Length: 117
Image (cartoon, rainbow, N blue to C red; front, side, top):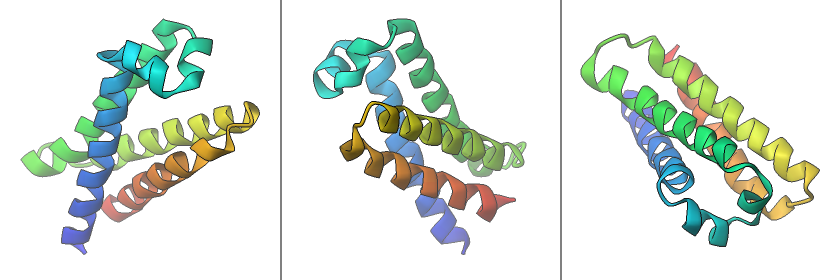
């Protein structure tokens, strides 16, 4: 079970690092890739990206370093909330094609949350 959780944590972290990187460092590329980025204040997009980057670190580093391990499920829970709120945002905008990614990463984050509790 531990190996499975590690795989899920790494996949989840990689996805959130990519998303967070695009929203913080590559904001202009994000505008071309995601239509919603133009409709949201830049500071909010960057804030979401920072939350995703920090959450990605939070689901991997505590267990990898064996320091403050209870932070990993808390970070995973926060990432699940970010994905859920993103899902609600896309539903409100009738962007149903975007929901699959949000659901996928929300489920991964919830698996990490309950697996590491």
